[in-house]
Amino acid sequence: SILHRAHFTTSAARLDQLPPPSAPEVCFVGRSNSGKSSAINVLTQQRRLAFSSKTPGRTRLINMFGMPDKLEPERDIGYLVDLPGYGYASVAREDRSAWAHVLGGYLRDRPSLVGIVLLVDIRRGVTDLDRNLIEWIAPSGKPVLALLTKADKFAYGQRIKMQFAVKQELAAIGMLHTVPFSSTHRIGLEDATTHIENWISP
Ligand code: GDP
Image (cartoon, rainbow, N blue to C red):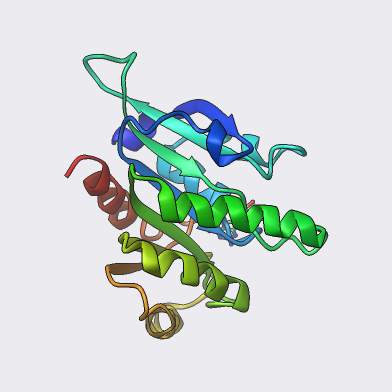
């Protein structure tokens, strides 16, 4: 998969530090502890790619991972963009509004953004924090892949039930695909991979 070629390209603390849009971008958003880093690592088959974004001081950055063209490896044909996890309880109020600015601004204004991967812990379902995020996502009109993470914690029937509930909660989003997902048990991995690949090279 093209996703396996992902490599760290750049970090940005502010929107104006992002490189100019040059290729399709798929972003990953989720509250802290939603399983975002684990999902990025398993999708790219790289054990530590996204954990580098979790080292202290880098949690608030936008991290971009380029995926090089096969024939012209110096050229990235797409990017995975790890947006800062939101909702750390320990974060001060003014930091939260800075976060909201970065997340909201990226989702609203980035012209190269072709799809949004939203990570939702299947056990918690859609929380108030997620609802805030949906208010930024929905107006962007961009397609959303909702990964219901840690699906291994639930039996099949319970997974389907939760998937249905999440779908209803996310009804405000136009193009929505939901997938029960587990990084540890590789549930939904193929479905998610295909979906993201199709966004990058349709
Ligand atoms: P992030 O803060 O959203 O990047 O979340 P992480 O990827 O660091 O995961 C948060 C916690 O959930 C860690 O303790 C992971 O080991 C655990 N976790 C992540 N994905 C899975 C999964 O698919 N199954 C289970 N059982 N635990 C998971």
